[in-house]
Length: 161
Image (cartoon, rainbow, N blue to C red; front, side, top):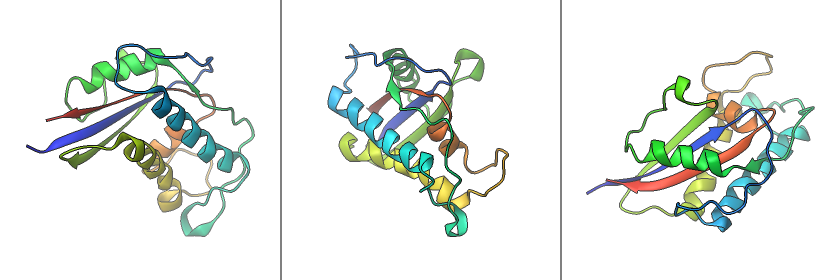
């Protein structure tokens, strides 16, 4: 039976401190660190004006780019959404955050590679579709959630059949 590795990301627009070890999930602290490190590396490129947009234009440097911090409460929220085994966003009124979803059709997942791959895939929306206009555009919503002003992260992955 084909299984899907589902990764759910919640992004809040407020800053929080690092939450430490999150009990009750299979996500390791090593993977949590990878998630935060990849996010911060991509966001740092944007802050420095090194992110490439469509047609090889460079995105303007960010002015208020803060480091990403992990949040266990968001991870718990992500767990509850992933457990529904449905590849759809949760109801907006049930959360105070943006959300990105990613799935891979596979007999087994490799979170060490799949999680950074999902992040980089969302980030690639800027290079594939981004323009130098000061408005939200269709097609870069995942990138916007990854790059927004203040973020804290909570993610979870699960293999479902």
